[in-house]
Amino acid sequence: MSRIGSKPIAIPQGVSIEEKDNTVTVKGKLGELTQEISGISLDISENELVLNRDSDSKEHRSAHGLYRKLISNMIEGVTNGYSNSLEITG
Image (cartoon, rainbow, N blue to C red):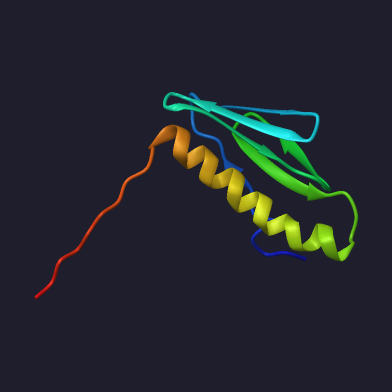
C-alpha cells in the first residue's frame, strides 16, 4: 500500500473541494484549480480528505500517491500561493 497515498489531507478553513466526472476542483481565497483523476475515489469529510483506490492494479497503485500529492499541492496553492525563497551564502 502506498504510504503517501494513504495519508489524509487536512482541508483548511475557506477551501472547498468538489469531485465531479473524474475531475477534482479546489477553490480557495487565491483562486480555483482543477485536476483530472482516474481510478481514485475521494472521501471528503468536514476537515479531511482521504483518497481510496478503485482496484489494486499496478496503474491505480502508482497513481495513488501521485494524485494525493497533486491535490495536496492544489490546496496549498489556493491558500498560500506560490513563493520562491532564495538563500545566498558566501
